[in-house]
Image 1 (cartoon, rainbow, N blue to C red):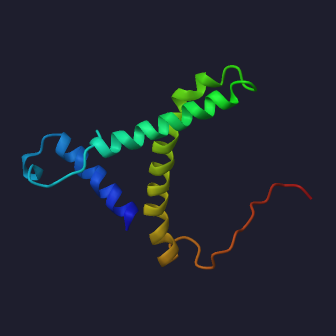
Image 2 (image 1 turned 60 degrees about the horizontal axis):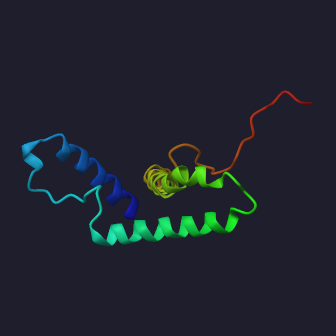
Image 3 (image 1 turned 180 degrees about the vertical axis):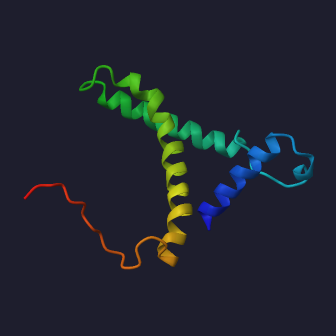
Amino acid sequence: MWAYLICLGTILWFVKAAGLPALSVVPVFRLVPEWWGMVLCLTYIVQALVSISIDHRFEKNFGLALFWVVWYPLLFWTLQAGTAFVGLPRAIFRLRNPKGTWVSPDRGVA
């Protein structure tokens, strides 16, 4: 249910951002977080900085990865929501393989 609500909310946000007047009364979540989202973001950045300060003795240029570390949760949750959104109907209705078994492709090795 969570994944479907996230996907629906994201679609509604993009439609509302496009300026369609028919959806102007639909409440849509914001991509810019309110104070609780900023607290969560600040907590995550402090955690990443503490991690970098601990690992700085062993990895000298690890601080350069901080930019990519911040994007990891967004990518993770987006991928998880998309996978659940697509995978749940396939798992329930067995759209592709009704047996549910893996068939390894022939690699030509005898």
